[in-house]
Image (tube, rainbow, N blue to C red; front, side, top):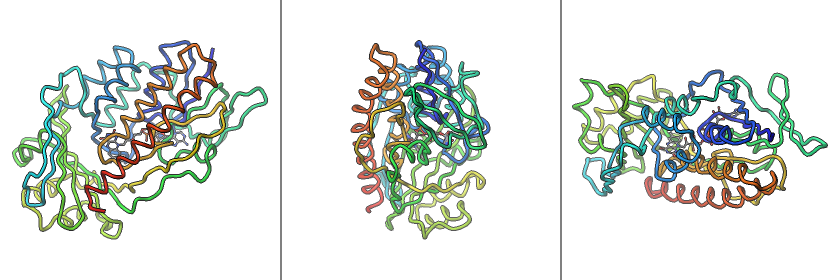
Length: 360
Ligand SMILES: Cc1cc2nc3c(=O)[nH]c(=O)nc-3n(C[C@H](O)[C@H](O)[C@H](O)COP(=O)(O)OP(=O)(O)OC[C@H]3O[C@@H](n4cnc5c(N)ncnc54)[C@H](O)[C@@H]3O)c2cc1C
């Protein structure tokens, strides 16, 4: 039986493990986090039509049900506003059926994707390097000791991927010179009435006069009351102070008071900074028993909300190839022929979009 080692139990790695367990493939996932709880990786994730299709393809029915039932109530609007809260653009998405997902909370989503993978995901194991063996297999080494061997290693280990660093040295993503200060405002009886009607319906981008912008979007859980309003300030590094909540408050001090109120009600402990990065297109690496998936290969800024959706598409494509009757290396090569151009086209679109949103 083919043995696949996956580095990283993020969105793409777990979707791939779910898809492979439905075929004659032995897949094991190694994750550096000590527990399933994510650390400072974000809150709300928008799931688009590609992401929905990939989830349907990768997840066994009971896992898909769990992920859907624990997702957010579907939104139906993407809109942009001035800092005076004047609506300048809006696109509506009426009638998204409840069988589709439009947004998830990242932590909840990860727990859903872990359903049924008991014994196949090892937390607290950091993949540090790999070697090809004489028989054409691959051996991974873990930080702190220990090894495992398989027929294929998939680097699904995100933006700082150790697998990518070794497979394609000098290919790391570039800093776009922008920072995101990311936080959330709990939705409860007190804060609910403070949220402008459009902000309850989906993703709303407020563009300041000075190149700063803030994205807002709700997650309202389908399976229990409550939720939160995601707050994502995109700004320049020199404007980010030590107190991140205060940074967001100061950045919007001259904006419409309804926006300032939302930020003021944000949970101070929830704010954390992210460097916005983008991968640079590179040539395919030599064929072999190591490949990459998701942010590990095509990191992109969150503009457009497509990074996770692209990682899910990668999982779908790779699983379909590995479960086909091609030999392993032909299957991996076929996956890379689709994944690399698709991933970097998406990166370039996201970079263009963040430029348009911030005027840079
Ligand atoms: C603020 C923000 C908002 C976003 N919003 C959206 C959105 O709305 N829609 C969307 O589609 N995308 C969104 N994205 C992008 C999305 O989060 C990523 O594109 C997506 O998580 C990529 O999935 P992945 O599986 O490739 O990597 P990740 O989900 O990052 O998973 C990588 C995993 O690998 C683990 N790991 C790292 N190194 C090692 C190692 N050496 N050994 C073992 N494990 C390791 C990490 O701990 C992590 O669990 C957003 C990103 C940010 C930062």
